[in-house]
Amino acid sequence: MIPFKHAARITAIAAAVMLAGCSSHHGDDNDSPPDPALAKQGQDIFRFDTFGDETKWTDQLRLHEVVRSAVDPTTALAVGLKVDAEALPPAVVQGIQNGTISLTSPATTVALLKLNAVVGLKGTVETVNGVDTLTRLGTTCALCHSTVDNSFAPGIGKRVDGWPNRDLNVGAIIALSPALTAQQKAVFNSWGKGMYDARFSFDGIDGPTVIAPAFGLLGVHKITFTGDGDEIAYWNRYVGVTQMGGHGHFEEPRTGVSVTNGTDDQVSSKLPALQAYQLSIAAPTPPAGSFDTAAAARGKAIFEGQGRCSTCHSGDKFTDANERLHPAADSVAEPEPTGATSYALRSATKQYRTTPLKGAWQHPPYFHNGSAKTLEAVVQQYNSRMTLNLSATQQADLVQYLKSL
Image (spheres, rainbow, N blue to C red):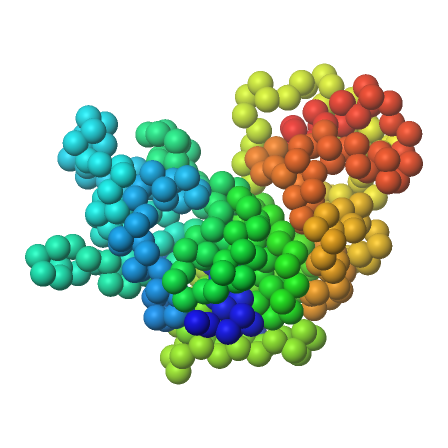
């Protein structure tokens, strides 16, 4: 068995688009449009690079054993894993459509991994006694921070990078590990879809947050809920090393975290390209007809006036994160719904960043802890906690404005 504290480290995956800390790049790199060639390199890293984290997912957690023997495509889709339809050969597409390829056989999952078609998972498949066998398994940034457009079937379609996979049950996936105790599995299974705790591995506090979007970050210097670093590379290193289990080093004196995996650094050289790709991902525009234009216009006036939203959600990024952070007491999402310690107080800054609002329509639930299931609930929470005295009509108009961003 793996000791509980160490097993928590195994928590990994994702938060994955956000990463980390000891890079030589600082603030201004978040402001200039990234070089397209560098961003293309970063796309490949984002989608397919494990940073050597098979050491954790295979050698320690032994998840490859479970996947190859018990995880069929139906089960994989049920826990939120996605399949890249563009990686499927025509014969496989036809077989899925006509039912000649079983979606209830783990062998099909192994075949999909061999095709590099499971978003965010990288498998090594070798022939053992004449049978394709999964021998190594790792994770990539795309596991948590990509989804698909469902153009082929639910959970199967073209990749959509940067969108948080709020269907993904990271905890349930980790809990499949035969290396964990029943107590450890219970914690991971309690997180639920779209939730992950990137600090549990160090402080042992069970207080997961929603998987964050990785789009619309150009020009935003503080890119995590608590603004720990001045650029995406900080969090990419943190997640890549301390959570995914990639080979490299992360150190943060403010929290006392210092982790080195392996003797080879497979993270540092990739951070500039990875950041460039993430900065190239624009926030998605709202679908046509998804909001009431007239109501949104009225809501904008409320946003900038009586609602006082623009006090913090300011500028074209709808955040004041480049100027300041806010104490935990300012957050209407506190106290934590699970009764856990404030997520901010578990971080390096002990404060919260104002979340940018572009593309907010795409990623419910809201607040760092997912305590507001809809934008309506967000507005209601602010109206109540901040005594805004907005009428029901004003609240509805404000929601329409938020949907239009």
